[in-house]
Image (tube, rainbow, N blue to C red; front, side, top):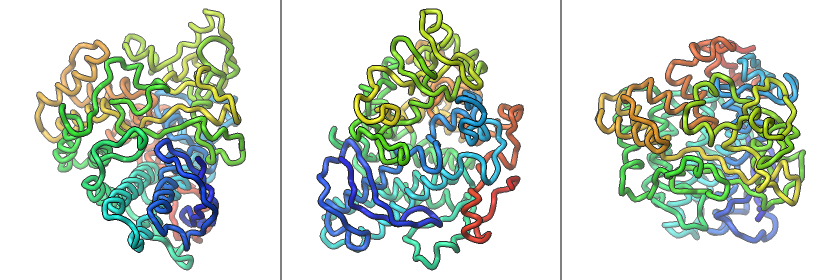
Length: 502
């Protein structure tokens, strides 16, 4: 289902009217015509459609260029190179890979636009729902909680990518569009915490099968714990550990559990499995074919990016050769049981008769978790735009390791921290290790490879200079992306550039 009738004023400093298009597995509604923002949101059906338009932005990966979060962050980390056809194929990716961004070069336009679009759409819903008079109390409280979670989700990405960003929690009058100043990260984090604390009491612990993809209380508590952890304030670690424990403990109301088989987590036919806490769905249902507006579709274009270029052989479909896996990670994971489910050994495939083109920065190792699989290649629309491979944002092994870290950093229950680390390792047949921060961080790299965590883990733990310094990372600069130059120009300098960029 494609919603074509909700018009929004979107995106910070570039609020233009446009048609909203979205699809989620938990929404099956029939379009009923056209409406403007001013006369929409009259009843629960219309408010719900507006909410789904906020969810829709989570799925985007091509605002202002190809900026799919998971593969892009893998390229920024020490797990992958940028790859592609050559250094000019996706210059923004290469610039992020070697930390050579400037105000006009890098992935910043897409990430800024996407997340502020999400913030603005959440603000619209929150403001409109307050004025609606025909909504039941239960519906209103749940939708309000979901919108606050989503606003927090988008702002969490903004503060991690950019640091100082405008803090906007209401619809902006036209006269104020170009006067929005930036707030310090502490203020952004405070708002994210506030939204999440207000959200989770009104969210359900679980959702019905036809609502998979909607936010649950467990997701909100897990994200709040993560937000506390990422602020690197040890006084917040005990609360973070408590939040994670609520999500992780056996017999809780959420029903999460580690899957017995690690590889099953990432199977496209095992969406929203018991280990998943927050998952962004993708599908082939839109049969999309418009290269000029890729965000209008439902597929995961990141899957096309990481596939082997011009591949001919069994199992996989051809991709574009981005994000070849670094030999550093290959060597670390070679003896790890998760290697087989995480990384494709291209040389082994060639030895078996397969062929592919070796592209820029080729290592002959490729991402397997989100690889293009022949069995899931779309038969309608443009196949490259319609991969039904979901993005897993948070899962139970991730929150196990974050709880263990929070316990260690707060001087909490050491036995519990060891139990959590041991559970993650035991699932793949590995022996226990002491629950030290180094061991927990190393486990996160191996367990969560290519899932969008490694770069931010390096930054927040103070290890980015040691690990990424040899490829260009500079302390006090590379932690954040540059602010898009167009935002500075449009505001005539009201928006300021991040330190170290020109």
